Amino acid sequence: MKRLTVPAIQNRKGKDPVVMLTAYTARMAQLLDPHCDVLLVGDSLGQVIYGLPSTLSVTLDIMCAHGAAVVRGSYHAVVVIDMPFGSYEASPQQAFESASRIMAETGAAAVKLEGGEAMAETVAFLTRRGIPVMGHIGLTPQAVNALGGYGARGRGNAEYAKIIGDAKAVAEAGAFAVVAEGVVETLANEIVAAVPCPVIGIGASAQCDGQVLVTEDMLGMFERTPRFVKKFDDMAGRISAAVETYAAAVRDRSFPGDEQVYKPKD
Ligand code: KIV
Ligand code: NA
Image 1 (cartoon, rainbow, N blue to C red):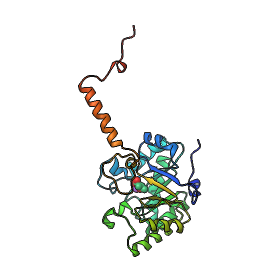
Image 2: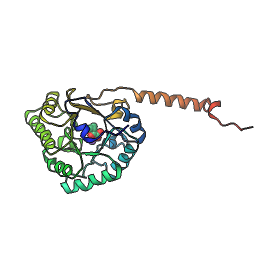
Image 3: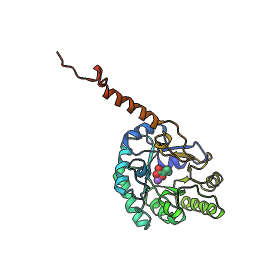
Image 4: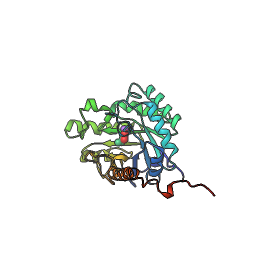
């Protein structure tokens, strides 16, 4: 199966919804790849696999290591890698240095960065130099300290208008797609209508040109998840039950059984 391309994703505007999930490891990438158009190596890995309180301390080294693993584990989906906090905001030049390192070390097809208007120049700088960029507007977790939390955005008129401006700015700068996170439904729908590239929703609207979730969230790996997460499975419950069974089998010596032990040849 030939790998999908960035232009193929860009051309999905107004057509079949783009299916996107996060992946951080090679094995998870293998399992998701046949069903997804885009695999995102999200900086959410800071919380999901490293137990960090936010995405702010995720580094370029971490993103490159996980990005390379996901590229190795996939054959079909476009792999997009998040630029971590502090690796791109200072200038378009800084962003190019970080993004080119991500592309060279991982083999991914694109990067994603957070921000609207303020990042438009950077999006254009990278795009014109051959690095496809996915935008990310609305609730941008790297700005949690400025936003004051992870609540939905666009509830007031001023913010509503600002977020539409952000979406237009990154789309006009050349982003091939834009993630709209944690925005009220009507705002998400307006963004979809306002920009020419696919809008991938998370906590946004069913009218978006695609959807993304954190895989561990949709698999039900966590007890508590935000409103916008639908649990498509209860992996936390299933893992607990399996491990409970294993622990009992070790303690009562029913594991390993005859089928799991090596016997002499003769
Ligand atoms: O880091 C991440 O997982 C993301 C998605 C939730 C869009 O940025
Ligand atoms: Na992210």
